[in-house]
Length: 197
Image (cartoon, rainbow, N blue to C red; front, side, top):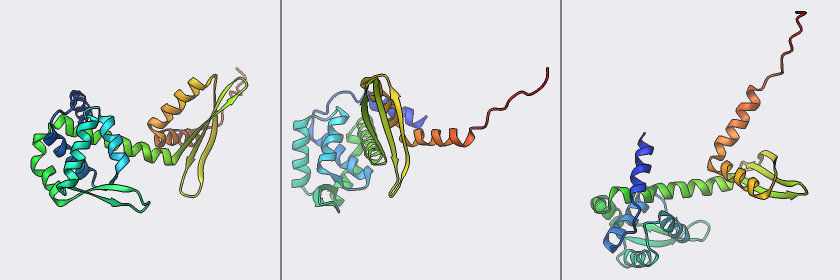
């Protein structure tokens, strides 16, 4: 029920933010809520996916936040540049969050959580499309740190339908894998009626 309310409120945030102070607060809030450094490209992609943040306002806001030391740029273990919220930015997020409407805050956080879940799924599930003479195979691999947990092929009549299947799997790869394992473990031999009736 709580998730449904958040979705409804985030759908209400359907217009772009038009003032820089609100966007500054929203970006600080987002980084504070996510509680980890976010790569420069990732924050940009998340901001654009919200559909409430204009590219030009975004650039102005990032410049303001960096100049005023609410955010800094640091390198992560992969050598990629990341935004890190600083104590001043955390204070902004905590004390001024009410100036950024809750619908915008919820939408930004929801988009970020979905974004990072999608990145995780893409590391755990690999889907390849293999055209064949009569259709297309969908090769699905569930990958653990060292092993392939599952490697299977499904057939679809064409590439368009194969991609639809792939997209559905990627909505919840763990659920897909879990349902297959549940099915296998609950599968039983067919019983035959040997009565003489």
